[in-house]
Length: 88
Image 1 (tube, rainbow, N blue to C red):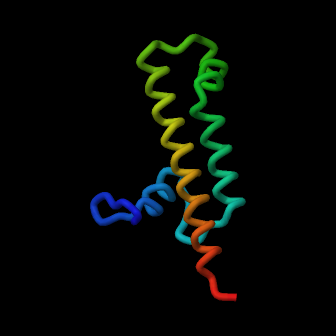
Image 2: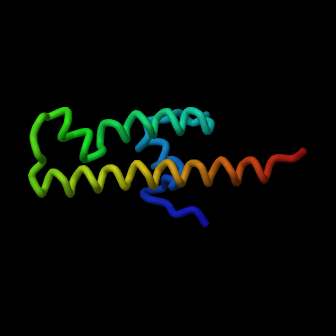
């Protein structure tokens, strides 16, 4: 069973996190994931800001990064399920 939040399916929430339209594929998921991972990875943020992150900033960036990873995994799983359900 796919969990819901406010009437939205997990797939819808994951698409929102990765800024993907209703029609998406593995390539678009991977592209969105890589784009956001480069922005939110702790090392990348520090390099961009040219300073060390504060402890709260590190925790926040790690939380966002985990959400991005979870969204990618969830959409990959949804695509696999859709592929296995398709009639031949």
